[in-house]
Image (cartoon, rainbow, N blue to C red; front, side):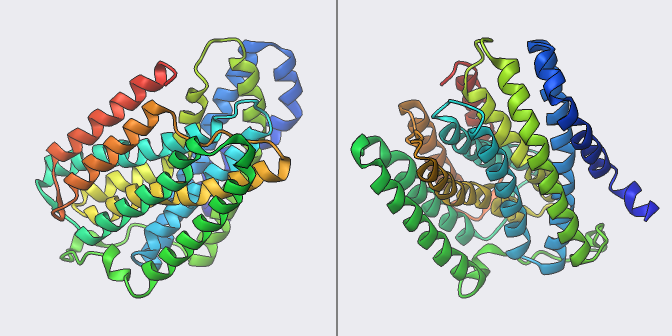
Length: 358
C-alpha cells in the first residue's frame, strides 16, 4: 500500500486539495478577487496533476490492449475530463459560447499544438517518420463532417428551430460515432495501426494490472470533477470584471483535458512512433467534437438554455485552414519537422487570436 501511495503521489496531492477545497471555498470567495484567482490557480495545478495520472493509466491500458484501442482509451479519457469540467463550468457561467470555444480550442490544440510539437521534435531527431496514411485520411474527413454539421451549419439555423436541430445533431453524432467506432475496431482496425520494427529499447516501462489502472483512472476523473466544481466558482469570481476574453477560460479547459495526450504524443514521436501521435491528435479532435457536442446539446435541452455552438467567422477560417493543411501534410504516410512547423505556426496564430478575444 505504501508503495502504491508513493507511486500515486500526484493523486494523493489532488485528493488532499479536494478535501480542503470545499470547506475553504466560501472563505476564498469572501476574501476577494485576488484570493479567488489564487485559489483557482492552485486548483488548476491539482487538476493538472490528476490529469497526468490519467495519462499514465491510459498508457498502461494502451500497452495492454494494443492499437487502436490504446489511444482510443486515452482520447476518450481526455474527452471525459473535458465533459466533466465543461458541464460543471456551464452551471457557473453565463457565457453562451463556452462550449463552442472549448471544442474549437481543443481541436486547435490537438491538431496544431500536439501534432506540430510532436512532428517537430520527432522530425529533428529521426527525420521522416512513417505512419498508416489511411488513419490520417479517415480522421480528417470525419472531423470535417462532424464539425461542419454540428458547428458550421448551426450558424444558418433560425433561432426558433434550435431545439429541433439540436436533437438532430445529437442523434446524427451518436450514429456517426457509433458506426465509426464499430468500423475502427473491426473491419478497418488496420487503418489505425502501423507495424514498427521491435528493438530492445521498446520494452514496456509501465507496470500494473488492467483492473488497477481502470480503478485509479476512474478515481482520477472523479477527483478532477470535484476540483473543477470549486475551480469554476473561484475562477469566475477571480476573472470577473478583469477584461480577460471569455475564450481564455475555454483555452484553459482544453489544455487541462489535453494534458494527458500531450506527454504521450511527445514521447511517442521521440521514440520514432508517429502512428500513436496521429491517433491521439486527430482521434482526440474527432472525439471532442463528436462526443462533447451531443452531451452539451443534451444538457442545454434539459435545462432549456440555448448554447451558441456555431463557430465565429474567424474560427471557421482557422478550422478550415487547419483541416486543409492537415490533409496536405498527411497525404503521403510520413511526417517531418517542416510539416510540424506549419502546424505550430497555426497554433501560435490561434493563441494570438485568442489573446485578442477572437
